[in-house]
Image (cartoon, rainbow, N blue to C red):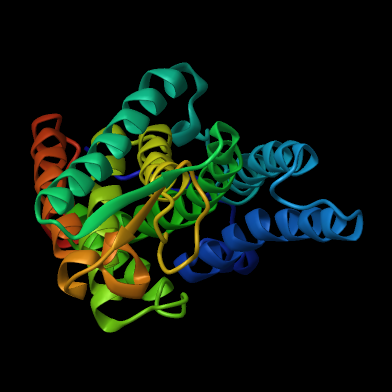
Amino acid sequence: MSAVVAVNRRPGKLWAFLQFPLTRFLLAVLFVTVPVTLLQLIGKAAGIVSRSPAGAVLSVVLLLTIFGGYACYVHCIERRKVSELDRRGAVREFVPGLLLGAALFGATMLILSLCGVWTYTGLNEISAWVYPLFTALLVAAVEETLVRGVLFRMLEEGLGTWIALGISALLFGAMHAFNPGASATGVIAIALEAGILLGAAYALTRHLWFVFGLHAAWNFTEGGLFAAQVSGHEAEGLVNVQFEGSDLLTGGAFGPEASIVAVVVCLIASVGLMILAQRKGHIVAPFWKRH
């Protein structure tokens, strides 16, 4: 299996500069974040709030902008087909990703319930889960296009799948170091559970749809259904729960994804995904081992 690489071979110093990995990563960030930021500023100026019908419509526009910005980056800078956003497999991979993400967080909550560290405290209106869904989709879209679609893929070009998986996981954990309630334990937990799991999901499919669904469903199940803190951020969802006990189990102020239970559950799933990826021949060797 070969890594997905840029195919731009135009001569000249400018194009050589544009093909430098750090340059490409920064350009990808600009292509994705600049139009998204502009739309968010316009929405704020228009008085649109996230938890409203207008906010939901804006979220859909932002989702399309994220994927459109990434596609423009690939076409303009890497000069290749955007194979990782191939529409032919979108539903076929997105839905299993949703199911897996929900199942993994559901398993985490079940184990934590058996450990007696959370209790049910009430039910909100059914509509309470609608708006967190859009938030989960937006966060997943931004992070997966940039971290797995760009960072992981570029690292893999030279260093191979396993090293790219480790480095991208560490950087993904570090990205959450400034979140509310963040701690060294929370950052390490994110790196081990989400960083490795999501990288493994991309390695298996070589598309963003599966990993996008997995990421969105995990966050939505955590904050939209169980109303638990998501990476330190307060959530308002359908089922209210209260956590009590050791931070090692509850995740403390960062939320249950910083729990040792979440780490173990996701690492087990990651091993399974990487075994499947290896069987499919999707593991890329580092450049010094290629013939």
